[in-house]
Amino acid sequence: MNTIRPGRAGLVFAMLLGGYHLIWSLLVAAGWAQALIDFIFRIHFIRPVYVIEQFNAGTALLLVAVTSAIGYVLGWCFGVLWNKLHQ
Image (tube, rainbow, N blue to C red; front, side, top):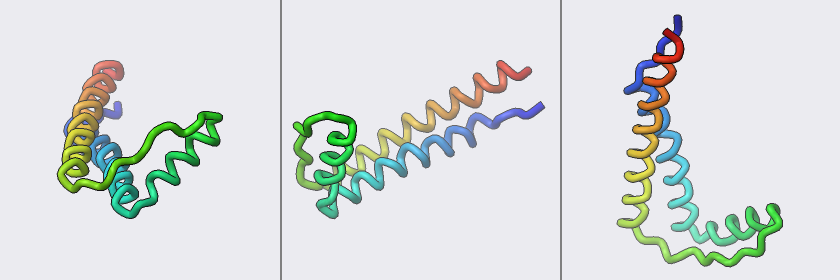
């Protein structure tokens, strides 16, 4: 039987979710986020209405920390549920 270690699954999810938001923060810092979000909306037939704020390092750090924590919890829950369902 394949079991998943919930702590490791949590770390993987944390790295994925936090890493995704780290990349977003870097796009905001580089000034490329507005063009990207406008493009994504347009290819989904949505008129862009959101304006990307100026980069703030504290906000970026908080974004990455919170999404990493959420990713860890989700990954941990996934690991626990997986192991319960595959006993």
